[in-house]
Every structure is written in C-alpha cells, then in structure tokens.
Image (cartoon, rainbow, N blue to C red):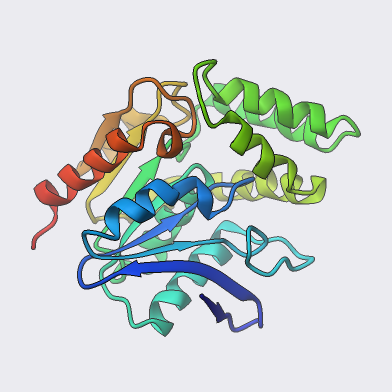
Amino acid sequence: MEITLPDQIKLYFDKAGLGDPTFIFIHGGGADNSHLAPQFYFFARRGTVINLDLRGYGKSDKPKKYGTIAQYADDVAYLCHQLKITSPIITGHSLGRMVAVELAAKHPMLPAAIVLISSGVLFPKAALEDLENILRGLRSITYRTVIQALIDQICLPSDRFKSQVEKTFFAIPQEQWVAVYEAMFAWDKVARERVSACKLPILYIEDSGGCFSDLPLFSSLCPQLVIAKTVGSGHFPTLEVPEQVNSMIEDFIKAYLKN
C-alpha cells in the first residue's frame, strides 16, 4: 500500500491485522521494512500493524534530496492523519528510534507509547567519536569497505541474518549513507530537548552488541523509561531474536498502557 505525501513523495507500507492497538514500525538507516517483518507478522495477530519504508528506502520513492529526522517524523504523522490512526504504538529500530522520539516530542498527542530498539538516542562522547570516524570513511572512495567494517562491528559472529543486512546496506548509495550520518549528527544537537519533551511510556531495548545511549541521562530526563536487553544478538535483534523482542514489547504494553 502507499500514500502520497504533501511533497508528492509516495510512501510505501505494509498493513495487516484489525482493531486496536495500532502498531507502527520504523526501520533504521541502510535498511527497509524487512528488518521488522518478524514484528509485523507477530503483532498483526494482536491489532492493526503498519510496517513502512521511509522515504528513500525500500519501495518508497527515492527523492534526490535525502530526508532528515524531522521530515521522517512528519511523514509518519501525516500517514497517521491520512489513515485516521490515533494512539499508535511507535517502534523504531536504529535510526528509527530518533524518528520515534522526534514524533513523540513534536506530536505529543499522537503516539500512546514508543519503543526504541538497538538505539543511540543520547550519544556518549565515545560513541560520537566513533560515528565521526565512520562518517569520514563514508565520504571517502573506500566507503564500501567502511560499510562492511560497520556491519562486522555491529553484528555478532553468531548472527544468522548478516547477509540480509549486507544486502540492504550495500543497496544504499554513498550519498545517502553520508546523509544518514549527517542527519543523526544534526538531530543529536537537539536530542536532549526532544527526549525531555517525551512524557509518554518508553521502552528501550538494548542489544548484546553494546549501548550507544547515555542511559543514566536518558532515565533522568524520562523517569518513565523502561530498559530491557536482548541476549545473543548484535544490532538486529528484530531479526535475530524476534521472540525476545516481541515478548518484551507485549509485556511492556500490558504493564504500562491502559486497555
């Protein structure tokens, strides 16, 4: 399915299930909605589910000017308006976690809760330095080597879906990869303000590959934050250990959202 955004970009999404609640899944940079397919099929039995391709990714239109975090969030808000969706549970993986936070901060009456998976929301200094090194590499002629090194870094040796990650990552052109990292750095400058504006229930699911968020700061800004951690997966637990991710989201909804 697709909708046409105000700037005439076509946004593609899969939709399944019926009734409440409504779940909206947002993939990360270098990905597409296949990275959240296990959650799409699982929660389609528990409500209405939308799994979208952000502008520039998957089956959505690919404009010459790449999107920003704010633009992605506005696209999701527009989709909700067009489909008459109220109080969705927004789940963002990787880059999608910034989109989820931006959406909750900019449209506070829209989502009922947000779930952030494998997320860097408030980058510690060491994480920023690492990301700066990656961005420099992405701007170079050896950018494909940098992408492979990035995949090797964020995936565990035991991860089974590494080839799928490589397929989607290498499908993204160099200029778009640079734009992804520039968008993350730009949003990081307002991250503290955006996080502080979030008053709704938040679940943060950390993977086993390492944390790219200052969780003590996050918790101080959002006392309602619930933190969980998967076992046996790198940066893509949605693919590698979907049963853990799905169970955590389901338990979070039962515990923190009113029926």
